[in-house]
Amino acid sequence: MEESLWYKKLEKVIQEENEKLYKNDSKFYQVDSFLKVSKKIDQFSPHCKKCSESKIVSEELAENLFDYLKGDFNSRRGFEKKLDSINKHLRKEHKMYPKQYFISLFSLLGVIGGLLAGLIISYLTLGGFMKQSLLFGFVGGLIVGRIWGKVKDNKLLKAGRTL
Image 1: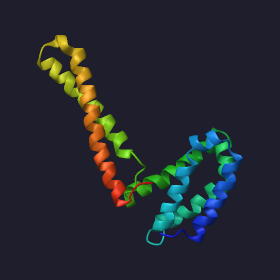
Image 2 (image 1 turned 180 degrees about the horizontal axis):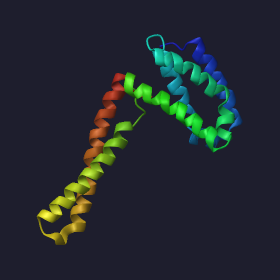
Image 3 (image 1 turned 60 degrees about the horizontal axis):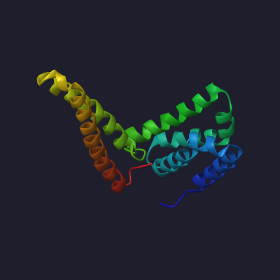
């Protein structure tokens, strides 16, 4: 999809504001992801009222990006809340997820499940192998979770639903 005039203007404003920031601050506050999110709301705005409203919020965030990120804690928190609100809408309504979202999520769930399974196995068998059972459960759960998450993330990538 070709970029709209709105997005090109927004991208220029974000880049100008971003130049005022230190490079590390730009990476820490994920200014690149703000651009990707803005591109997606521009793409969905003709068909989605919430995305159209989010364009106005994105313009305000872009114009004051330096002030938000270099201001006090409350201004940074305000920036993050507004951006999170847009991200939640994209996830909920348009099924758009960040890269490696499910790898992270399922790795955590796999570790928790593996530790619980290791604990149960340890209690059902001899209790002297608690450390080994927990270690095996941790590693097994992590591996299964990462594989499961990778499969799901690859499906999203093929469908073009990643940010």
